[in-house]
Length: 179
Image: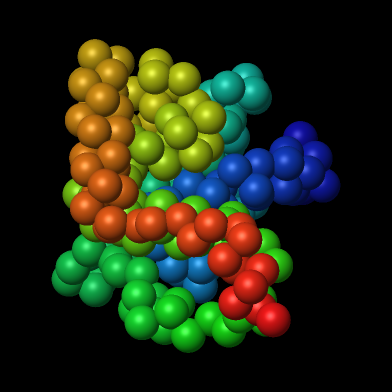
């Protein structure tokens, strides 16, 4: 397969790779770097899987290993950029899509507080759409382990979301606040 064909196959997965990278790192800049590193490593590989499911899993393994290398280099679990206070500074003029923004930020902060194993498995199954058996292949664990990790991770995420004490500001009050 030529470099063009390989490049197109990789490009088709960039959005899913990016979603997984954000779920692992919690940081947009790190996610971009991880996806770029994954693309470069896969483009430079002498052999790639021909089978599409194997190719997809191979890309996600490269990304996950790159993220683990990043975490080791930093000597800690990668953390999200910014603080909750940074996001509180978002002005009222940007609130035209505030429900979506609040939901996104709430989930992002809650995911960042989960353990690495929980973020990893939720990133593969819930963010990137892998089946449990595909996620098991990527993680190198039995499918039953993925099943139990997903259940525990979802429970932990729900607890984080509940602990956030987020109260949705009613639409009428938002409209009045803008006036």
